[in-house]
Image (tube, rainbow, N blue to C red; front, side, top):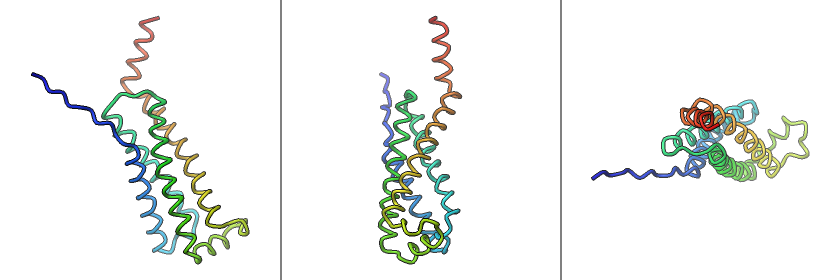
Length: 160
């Protein structure tokens, strides 16, 4: 009698939580080091977000052969979860850390418009837009190089 191992669907919310935790830890490390006032260090947030998308999508790839749009939706779920949590954290942090808020205002040309709310909205918009684009590019790249996609293309050519 054969036993079949059940495929366990991967939870992309979990990957989003892990990614948000990594973003928060990086922010706190930068704050402790006194480097949080320099916006150039935020670029590493994109690396962390991409790592979360990569982990989420590669993990899912082990369990099932999903279509492009369902994989894109899974990547977007990971991005939305991680960026939402991080934006709420940034709003909460900047509401209490007046020194960092003043330093951000001083380094910006739009200093009268910067508040914890606008900073959190900017972080959210920046993270969502870049995360969806990264997820799309990653899935398109891996789809074009996967054996299942090549197999599907061969089946389409045969059925013509």
